[in-house]
Length: 116
Image (tube, rainbow, N blue to C red; front, side, top):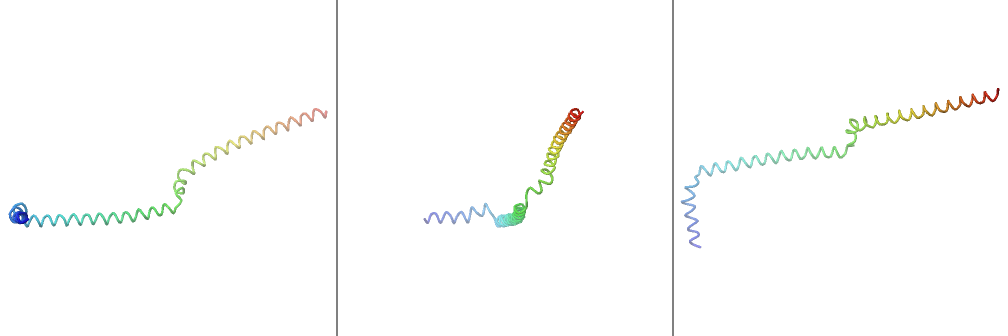
């Protein structure tokens, strides 16, 4: 154990001084401090973004999502389909009315012929 303590002490006194100086320690400390500040700034930015995203999520959850999409996409498409169906229905009604009129006229002609 004494050998280990002696080796550790000699490494601290001799080798460490050759590898690192006080200036290197200060630079490393300043670098660590700047990295810590950047990390804290990123965390603060992340918290702010998270708060805004949470607020937007709550707004979306409370709103009707179909309202925004419906007015721009779904409603015009549905209106176009309804218009097409309405035209088809109107054509069918017109054809039915024409057939009824023809039947009435034929019935009147037949009645007129039988009366004469």
